[in-house]
Length: 83
Image (cartoon, rainbow, N blue to C red):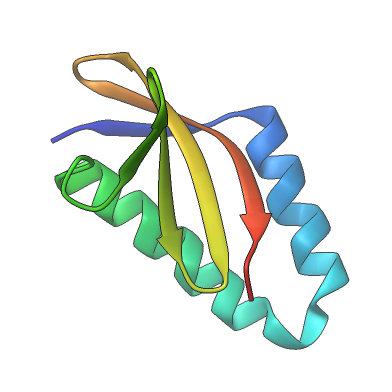
């Protein structure tokens, strides 16, 4: 199992997106939980490498960008809106 940490920037992104899309708060929360779960179980199966060491994972309506801090820890560094 991999530990998933959300950076201050990613948490700020989630807060901003939640405020910008109040009527989709439940979708945003579900996507955040889905991203954390998939990254914790098998990150490479559910993501694509964007550039060397940076990966992208999509769970509608969010896209998350993450990197491996080490072999047991992932840091979600930023979150964007695709909805």
